[in-house]
Figure 1 (spheres, rainbow, N blue to C red):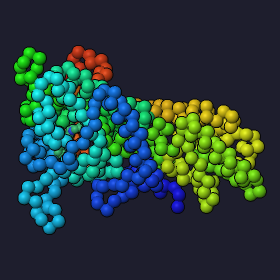
Figure 2: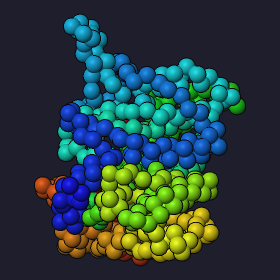
Figure 3: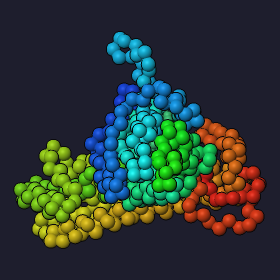
Figure 4: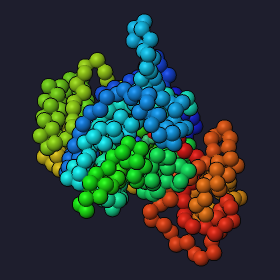
Length: 485
Ligand SMILES: O=C1CCCN[C@@H]1CCCn1cnc2ccccc2c1=O
């Protein structure tokens, strides 16, 4: 029957698994770590895609499509790029009964697929900047506990790969893209994120530096890397000989970036906003923003009620809202209320005999269950105001909740206490990789070790003489720490 059998604050893992299925986002698949994305999820991916794709087109970034398959030689091209990742690479070893004499990898990411051709295409400075993006799937055969959207063996993403003549251009683009990722989280998914730089230990080993937008899931006290924008420096240019004749006629290597966001974004949104009645969708990404439900009464003017529902949907659609009516005669209004609440539709409109008589409709917000009667004459203006209010209050509530989870600490005792309280920890750090490894070693446990999440671009004041929370050495920067997904 309807309703969740687990509460979000009591059994988060079970709650999440049930919400994604009951909300008709996900269907579990018979291969572990693989999930079916149903239309209710796919439409969110499409809405974000439409925003991001339009924005990168404004930046003159072109979409392309490279093959799914990577040859072994090119994948092994550079040890420290692939080191540590190798166990996750999936391989094609045969076709039919015939063993392949050379095994072929399935792309886990596309640097090694693309960059031999960057080398071929980039000859002179007029070939720069080269800025390509592809929307595709990637496969990483992970073994840690699979979670729909958050950690799966195949996922959808966009991966941008760009090459510039100068480091300055690359540095600028890294931050331009990171701002788009912030907008995806904060303006569309209503999820607050922190922009920052990954530590040397946590960054992409093949790159120069990694920037990130970090989200946080209060229920589990885990940080989650929302999206990444890397400056690769000239590392891949050296590896794949991607160089050009600069304006002074000298041979120079290009400066490169690569950046991605994935279907993980959807899982973060569900974890942050969902409640014990199911999904709660921010209007900006809701495939259905308004559901209109007729409330017929035995001998009341049923046709009039259905006509009012149809004209309400028509007006809302004409005003640009994604609205539908649920006129199925085999379900009660009450059943429909629960069903669409489970699916997280931001606004419900009920129309019964009284509403018809008063020429009003009853509007019910999904986020706070508040009800209000709207004159039919003011419908579209009022719905716009309500949807904007829902979007903003979802973000404000999530930010307030996330901020209460942030704890500033100055020493190891405070750190471990905050960690046990599932906090996102802000601490002064000496920025030494060895010390980060020590923190991981000292916090190992079945909940997973603590790690650095990012050093925020917005650095609080660091008074002279402040010591590192873990090493006691002079602190160099404020850094967020916590367990993570
Ligand atoms: O994040 C991004 C943004 C998009 C393009 N790729 C970069 C870096 C990917 C890092 N990575 C991540 N998992 C992997 C798994 C197997 C092999 C290689 C890799 C690998 O290189």
